[in-house]
Structures are given as structure tokens and as C-alpha cells.
Image (cartoon, rainbow, N blue to C red):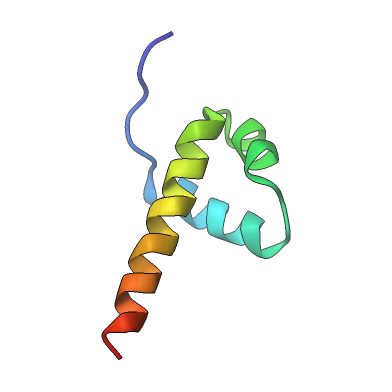
Length: 57
């Protein structure tokens, strides 16, 4: 299986919206036709950045 490019801004926005609606990462990956690990990695990285930003305040 070939490696796809990084998530686009539109895909990232869609992931955030889907998470806000309570969708699971596996369901989001099917909707976007992306590997579920890609979605999980984006979510984990986003949470890590948000926690790091919260520590600065």
C-alpha cells in the first residue's frame, strides 16, 4: 500500500468537526478514506499541543 500525503487543512477541519459530533476515529478514517492510525496520530498530536499550550498560561 502506498503512502499518502499529509492530511490537508480540509481533512483536519473535517476531523475536528467529526470529533465534535462524537464520531470515533475509526469511523472518521472510513469517511475520509484514510488509515485509522493517521487519524489517531493527528488527534494525539493535537491533544499534546493543546496540553503544552495550556501549561504556558
